[in-house]
Image 1 (spheres, rainbow, N blue to C red):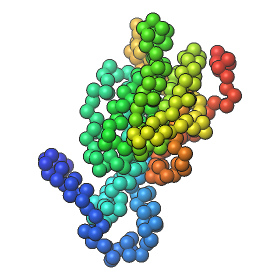
Image 2 (cartoon, helix red, strand yellow):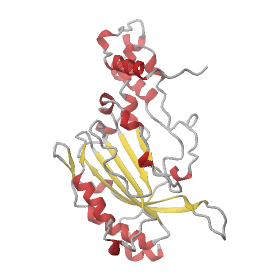
Image 3 (cartoon, rainbow, N blue to C red):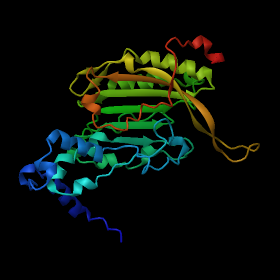
Image 4 (cartoon, rainbow, N blue to C red):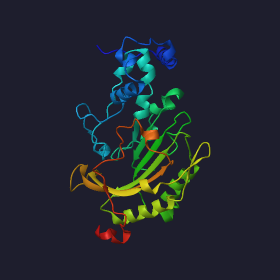
Amino acid sequence: MPQRPLPKREARALRRSLALTTPQIANPQLQSPLFAVLPSEVRNLIFEYAICQIIDPHKSGPETQSSRSRPKHERIPVMDTTLLCTCRLVYTETRTIPLQSATHHVYGDQESSYNSADWDHYLFHISSQSGQHLHHLHTISWWLPDFRRYLQPHLHWRKITWTILCSNWDFENEWETGFSYADKISTNLNEIRFPNTCREVTLELEVLRKNPKYRRKLRAISDQFREIQLTRRDESKIALDENYCMEYTWDGETWQPGDWEHGPGGYVSATYHTIRLCWRAREPEREYMHYDHWDCLRSNKIKEMPSGYSSEKEENA
């Protein structure tokens, strides 16, 4: 029989008591070889592999929404936190690992008529204590996102990624309307104050490869961002790291609206062209990605474009 959720007051009291749990008030568990024999380094490694968010070929189900299935996102990641329930001592040593390893995705679905910006997201309800340990925010949208929405003061991200699919952008009427996609993004990147914990920010501009005009436009837009330095709340800067910037293609599907000739809409095969810009603190990745066993931005299905790729050849690419 499924358990009923605790009343809100009891749930808050339970969270507070868990937050106050320390090794000093826990049983030392000296009868267990895990604590009495194994060095802490080995024990922590066991905990890491037992709890981190991963793609498990035996447990991870396929991503059934085509609009969300992209390289390294073909299967749904899993995380088993059962170990945290064994005893207080295990809990104190492992309670931050789930948050330190997790990538939190925010999606806007291409074929949907509703706007996910109207939703009450669970990230808004994370406690300040939990917010200290957040790892990766990855927003994927088919319109310009609200860049500040998930950068609230209690959310201390180490890594932030915005993937923006630009195939529906109206570049033709920018001059008439006075609206500039480049200016809008540039203003946000310059004005946002990122968490002091932030070590990496990635911006991906993506378009269907069959549209060379849009690819040239996105390359011109992205070139405007290369001189921008991002600013943390303590006014320290994060510069662009060219070693992590790239252009690549990948094969997936796109939503094709229905019409009187072809019938109802549906997903069709498509190739995407993506421009990735990455701002990084000059420190080893392991310092902030130690628990990130999923690493959802790297995939062997990404086909990197050669460094000498020229926009003059776009029409025949």
